Image (cartoon, rainbow, N blue to C red; front, side, top):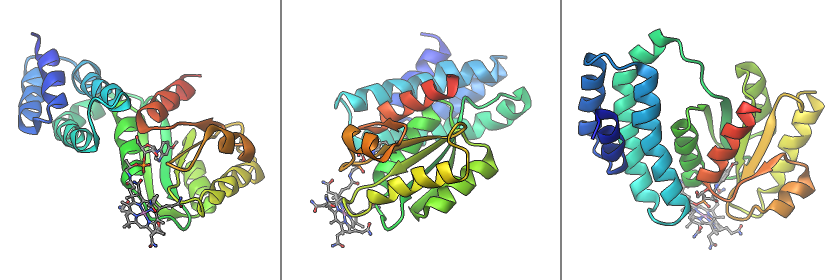
Length: 211
Ligand code: B1M
């Protein structure tokens, strides 16, 4: 097994120290930062994402794998910076106004980062203005909103309206998700993309960033 396949396998098992050591060894062996990122770390996280989507692994396994990915990223970051790699997309991710649930939102962030998408985490209880102004200021192409309460879902419509009012609807895609959110709701409020789970959201975000 190559070191990158081993790295991917260790990441999937959440072995943070092993991943860290393998990143260090791969760099010392002269492997490129991009290769290590894509074939070692992101490939491992991609497999975890797919298994999560198929209910083969659950939230704890995803969090442990994400910790291993972050451990590897700590070692890789300086080499990535000097390789001057462009992120594959940039997303502002948060939970809407009035809503404090953040476990699903944090999974979305893990999956986005696992696809190489840069994330600005605006947290919970986020006003439409903060979503949209942050996206404009940071040059993000995606706003991903999470809502867990039927009473806070309506705030997603305000995000869509604010994007339109600011005249940036052609530059920024609004994605929506969370337990009470459906494709029909997404269509009703005029949002661009609905995802039922974090892994699907990350696949959508990657596809949208390429288009
Ligand atoms: Co609350 N809560 N909660 N809660 N809570 C629910 C959501 C509820 C269904 C429980 C129930 O009554 N059965 C209910 C909502 C009812 C409704 O509106 N239909 C509820 C309620 C009523 C409340 C309070 C109002 C309770 C009260 O105070 N009376 C209150 C509200 C506070 C507020 O937000 N203002 C409240 C508070 C809390 C806690 C703080 C105690 C805690 C949150 C802790 C935290 O997040 N840090 C909490 C929790 C934990 C839950 C439950 C038990 C679990 C939610 C969760 O994290 N699930 C929940 C009941 C349940 O779901 N069984 C419940 C795991 C998480 C991985 O799933 O977030 O759905 P989820 O994310 C999924 C997908 O939805 C999707 O991806 C993830 C999977 O891959 N997804 C996205 C999520 N966001 C996405 C964004 C995207 C795409 C996909 O962007 C594109």
